[in-house]
Length: 338
Image 1 (cartoon, rainbow, N blue to C red):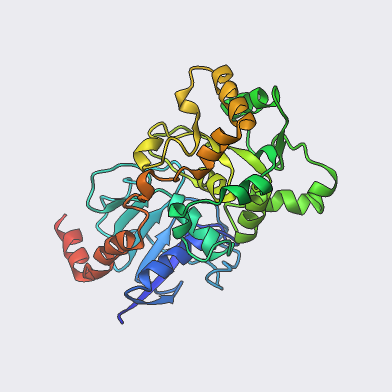
Image 2 (cartoon, rainbow, N blue to C red):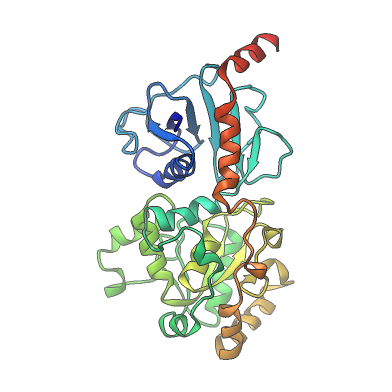
């Protein structure tokens, strides 16, 4: 197998290992992958906070900051956050992966949801297969007997619409909040409370956080899955964590969420309601009607149990192959000509 040397740059030093692990896994299907922070062939970088003076626990070294204009290196920008994914594509040695729908040969649309699903398998070890659970029928009796509470949320930051939904639900029953925002759990439910909250809040950053977050959600019938933004085409971890825990997602964010292939009968889409009173009426009905609740739980997550194209490791590998197999001397020639 051909050897490919890779490193990461711009990721938090102590976390988000699964993003990098995802690429190691995919590349390993065809290449011998070596982590080399000093002399990599491919640098996978992001725009998240990191400290270049601390040891990167994934690289076991201080993260080396590579020059983006070094044409002997190839750079792949990856982020699930709101980003300008085409800002560096004019450079011949840059490519990017993100949620936006861009028509560019050096760009791959792959929302970060696949990385968050991967983390449930990779670091959290909550499933034996990264993707199979998305198309496996959920066990209604198990979920009904386990998810007996009303509704949950784990959040740190304020969002006006999220607060309105939270308050509206609390007019009916109390929403259990385990995070810093609207935290209302005390006593035995928050044993080692500060550690609990930190792990839950940082769930997107490490496997332990994901595991505790899922275990918390598994106590409730509903989960508030409201993104910080309704940016078109964005798709992050919240809806996947709700589904995985057996809770019915109460979703708000990407207005074109159905374009991602999700089954409208498997979750509650807040975009469909003219007002929150109508939304609360549906919540009350589902909560009191076992047959309706069962319908939501038993409905496939994706229509016809068909995953979108980007939920396929070979889809990612084909894009990475194009990057890797492009010979370096072509990059240099292009730089000279243009």
